[in-house]
Length: 266
Image (cartoon, rainbow, N blue to C red; front, side, top):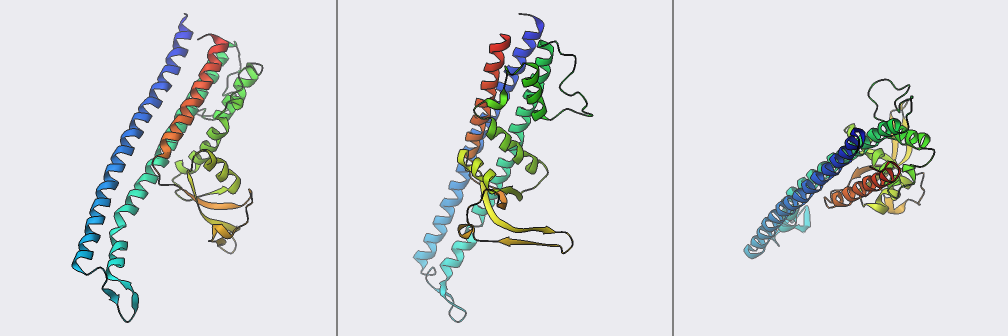
């Protein structure tokens, strides 16, 4: 095995290791999250039970202004605050790890494009006419297809569509947008694979810079389905979706690696 083949083997080995580390980190995050959630849930149930045993739970909160609301119902709401905090933490973790996963995907695809350039003895590199750091994985994939005469078609791999959808999300999240706009068709495509996106408000009229206004609707159930509808969205709080995201990325890298190895016998 020549030196270049050794380097290629090392590159694929490194990316596999990185995704293994991410998978291990996700397992630990899920375990710790579930432990924290259970502790808060036990505290919540104990507090509510103590209220019921004391008789305070069923006492009216305000007989004049809120005769149908009990002290216990108000306390249920107040004691739920830690759960909302946990959900917020979970969403932030998911957002961060989407960015991390896609950074690794982008990195390996760009490295493969340069490996292909060398194997195909191409004078023109993948980053030709691109100033600054080359980070466009779509251009890298198009370059690989072109110089291999369609033998390595990464866009035909099973998880390519989902990778590009996650890439779209990554761009929004990397700019610090916890609320972002996606078309309904994109949301449906993502959630079909991973229940990741929460639809918040449909955008009935785009932002008018002259008037400083945007028009929103609130009831998702009352909006007719249309792939072109645009929604204000956020990332879900179910931390378990990270396992699915990790598997999609690992399966994608393994398929690309297999195609590459078949052509270049790495």
